[in-house]
Structure formats: structure tokens, C-alpha cells
Length: 369
Image 1 (cartoon, rainbow, N blue to C red):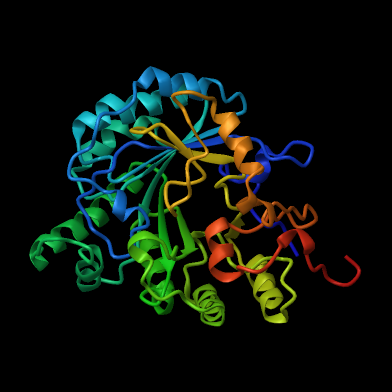
Image 2 (cartoon, helix red, strand yellow):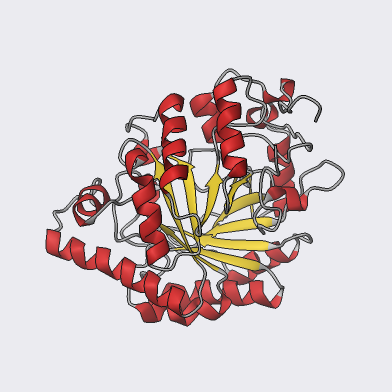
């Protein structure tokens, strides 16, 4: 079996390992809880607000980032961070500028539904524009994006937003910006991944991230795709995708330690496919999330995980180490260096493998390897 992930991926947690131990190399900051969409599958939907509360002082956040000596990447998320020019100029731009002065790789998570100029304004300091693409067409977009809305949105208004995402992605890609689109595999998307992938290639995306749906928050009552159906969706996707577009499988629910022959067959197919990689989960292994409003430090910005600490009173490294001693992490705290796998994502493991202690497993290697 080949490498489990592109080691060149700046967010890959293996890059930060030292003597077999994970180091904190990546921080994600939640900069807003406001969003103009109400997507049915949103993993942070219950956190969304009509108006953001007061944020912590920027200098406190920068001081905490300064304390992370091994920091290599910074991600900004929400909510929708482009919805307010004030947020862009007072918070997003300064954080991105800090990151670039320090030589960090940066990513912003955005839905691209606002004027192109807002994205061009921050583009000099952005390495990855990361968008969500869980939509088959305009009608599907209208149904999914307003799935948790409290108001009716006309098909025409929805169509304008749908087209703006596409136009903005095309424009940014034409300017040489790295646009990455993420699709979650669920019952709505599993049969359409190849078509979605080819469309993303057509509009200029440089990467297509493919993840399981996280059955949390607004998506908690949506059906989880069973693993046999998930396997079949991946096989079909590999056959139908555009081979020139980099596919990154994130929080992949099939691991090299699986004793199932069908999982091993699938992993061999993934490893043999051109321009396909699997990213080990950064959450809690080399990354923490910081809430800009409360100061809470968590493993991730979604999933209901309790805070590990608070930037008001302690260093990010302290919260990070606290997670590594946490009972919920222990059965996932594994590493098979022979294949480069650092274990499953917390939510995926609890969703698909609630009884498995991954510390008792080792990667299944071909005979003679």
C-alpha cells in the first residue's frame, strides 16, 4: 500500500509529528457565527446567529498564536466570514496578514455568495479558498440550502446565489487562486459525486475534498450512509471523476487496519488512482479551534465537544495536550507509520466504529511487505 496522504499537504498532521508524538502546528479560528444560508447538512447550524456578539481583543488572539512555536497553518471559518466588510477588514484581513508575515499557509472557509470584490480584497493573503459543494443543480441547491431556514426564499433569489458561487469560483480560479471544494457523502450526493467532480474541474477548482457527512447539529437527524453504500459510492466516484482534478479524501472511514477484504480492496483502488490522496484528520492531532467570541478552545468547531480550555487564561499548547490525555481520544490515539495512517476522526469513529479500540489494530500489509 502506498502513502496514506500527500505529505506535501500543509494541513497533514504527519508533517508535525516529532519522535512519534503529535505537535500543534495548525489553528482554526471561528471568526463569525453569522451566515446567510441555512443548509440542511450544516454542522454548526445551532451556533448561527442573526448578529455576532463582541469579539475578544485581536492582540490577545495574536499573542496566543505567537506562543505556538511550531505553527505552520491558519484557517478561518464561521458562519460566513465574507458577509460583513467590517469583519473582513477588522478581523479576517489582520489575521491573514499576520499569518503571511509569519510564513504560514492560510485557508478561508467561505460560501462565495457575496460580491467578488470582497474575496479579491483578502486574496493576497489566502492560500486556499475553501467552499462547500453539496449541490447537484439549482433546484437541489434551493432545497438543501434553505432546509433549516425560518423564511421562504424564492427560486429566483436562490438561483442568483447559486450562480454567484459559480461565477466567483471561476473568477478566482482564473486569477490563479487555489479554490478547493468540499463535498459530503450522504444519501443526497452519493450517486452524483462524479458529475459534481467534473463540474468542479470545469469551473477551475484545483482540489475536490470528499468527506463523510457529519451526523451532528442540523444534520443529526439525517440518515448516515451505511459503509457498504459508502464503499460503492467511492468506487463509482473513482470511475466517473475527472482524473486531472486532485481528489482529497478527508476523515475517510476506511482505514489500513481494517480486517475486511472489501476495505483493503477499496484502499488499493484509492492508492492506485492518479491525483487522489487521503488526509489524516487534523482535528486534535495537530489542530485546535479557537472561538473568537468566547475564547473556548476545542478539538473542532462542530460536534458538541466540550471546551478544552480558554485563550483568556491559557496557552493553546496546554489545551492541545489536555485533549491528548482525554478519554475520548485514547482509543483513537494510534499510528501505523508503515502506511502513514494516524487513525480515524473522532466523529467518524463514533459514527461507524463505536466499539473499536484502534490501538489494538495494525495496518494490514501485503504478504512480504
